[in-house]
Image (cartoon, rainbow, N blue to C red):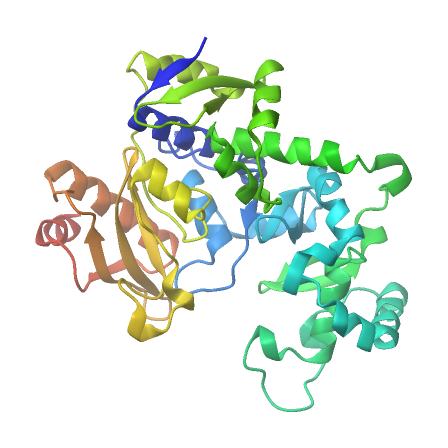
Length: 403
């Protein structure tokens, strides 16, 4: 039987799948970090640090106040690993098998695999690999730069490029991060029990499982959204979604106003029944990272939330509309605004350079009260308890001062 949903019900099911429907009910523990990553399937990595770096902020949006070192410990323990999934991501260790095909045949990975560099520097790359195998893990910082400071990823020193080639090939993995810098070691020391001949699924099996993971993480899915989550080859996934539905993994649904087939993951069956009965509610308010799964697919964010979002940190300053590192604002099941923020850690100040509400969103009492409470908690977690709002609704400024 096909279930019929309103757009808001579809949003709530998506947020339920992502762990963003309701506020955390208890204090977070270290185990919650791994559980949240497994729930999302992937945790994208980005190094920008005007506020907490993206993976830490994505977890905070779901867990509330927690110790960021727990993510570092989770990586060092081997419970997650790093590789190219959506982009560079932390991935649960059990899903190594799904991405192993990319390591063995990286030719389709574009700039992530500079084959020409490998061909030109094969001897040096092999020599570096052997030294790591013999002498232990290294960081890029362990190698001096011969010609001054680099200007970005396009200007990496040779050893950094060698390390990244070996990482993409899966011959090196990230053992841990120190001050968010990768520490590389040979894969056989990090995954000693792995055996390609024994453990590698077929590509078709891996693709099937990645699509299933995407459906579970998204909660509500249609064929056009499937490829993006793991950066699979774009194409028609309708048949595979119907196959998963026939197997009981997905529940067919229709969303009011949409023409495409929609499916709800079976793990949300209880929430789906609540949604259909009009009983599924959202109580959560959060600032999302630009690299949060909820918004990283611009088209999906527009279709599902009516939220037109682009990451402007890679846009020239003169062309930005909202700011350098703008955080979408989630409130009770809707994306209601965005803010350009910066944590001044030495001064203990969390600066909101500008906060914009979406068209049609009024700064009512509940919205401003919830946003103010969320922002104070967010600032405190950053270690910057003093909030400064430079530009935003006057009603919100009043609530910020009252808290």
